[in-house]
Image 1 (cartoon, rainbow, N blue to C red):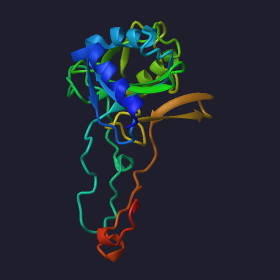
Image 2 (cartoon, rainbow, N blue to C red):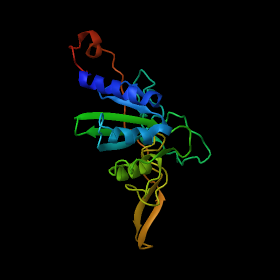
Image 3 (tube, rainbow, N blue to C red):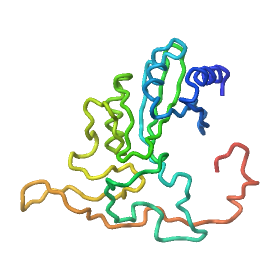
Length: 234
């Protein structure tokens, strides 16, 4: 990390104390985790205080950490059954009474300070609440409006205080949230035109389950770590 970003990280840690916590980033971005109850005060301060001046919200996205870090590949031999949600026909509908792992759902904010030429990433977890809820930052950065609608549509994350929280990518009658890790890739229903009824109708999905990711484990010298060139990814 460059020295100017180390100085920024120290300033943020000193300013916000226990409200934030710096976390590692695999891509080298300066990243802080924010406590849920302190999200709005931290965002307002990052926007308004001269030391930070993060005037722009570049992006906002939801994340589902269900089974994060767990491998799908539970075999050392060839398979013809696949390892994808595309082979599952289970109908997944959110359980209204279930509670979630407090670190399953998160919202990530990518901020830009034009004045100081800084970039910053914030992450907040939604906690155990069902449905998951975080405060809206539309009043802080107006660009969050459609981003929050997208995260609501695809992940089912609610944004308290959003002026018009409704689906933005899927149909109004869509059931479930397609970017959740337990949602089947083939979906639950499909839309088609019925010539007999002369209208568009919904029906159970007719896509046949199929192997999308066949896998063969090879154990030969092509994969020996000692013969890889320095800096090689594979």
